[in-house]
Length: 268
Image (cartoon, rainbow, N blue to C red; front, side):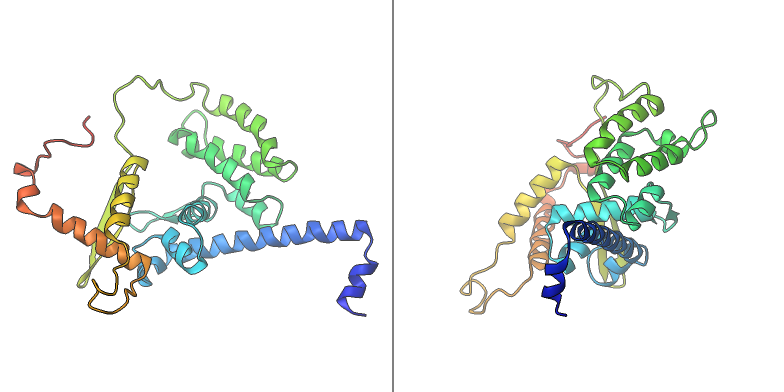
């Protein structure tokens, strides 16, 4: 009997069961893919294969997906399956119970993102435990993972709100305090005769840099490229544009005296 004949004989109940099972298969495959990305990141594969230490950049290139989706994948991989710290120390995953449920196909990526966002908004002392309340987060995260297996992503709104009130009753600090330093860091490491650069920027700075790279990294015409087509990849054009920015900034006339920036982008 052919596949088409079998499909014809399926009842609606059997078809629904197959639909549900295939959804679970997809989720399990997604979880395994994120697990592999996390392991590649821990093994230093992004540096080894020339992706500047960024798991997101590696995923974007090899999977041919958008930068935004690649970043979401890399962040999911980190919180679900752990990562390495700046000094090479292993960091435990923030969502081990969610990872287990995802690997069983019980929850999907939207569930993961809801729980991940909730964890990101909690104070650090809640995630690591305190003297008065040891390890409150694993209990809460496990409860959310179980609930997520029974409801849609929107069904997590109320449980998250209730846990927020218990774990962080004071809520976020007032916004009228002293300015907070923008969230940006860069790590620059030398390897033989090359340098590896990795880090993250706040939204405004990243937007400005992206605009500069787009303006300076456009493909060159054959005429401007010595009569040959510009065969550089997008990442190579970005790197060349970044080198141009560094060259301009390194001009002695553009450098501040005594290492003091006359117009800093942030001041305490």
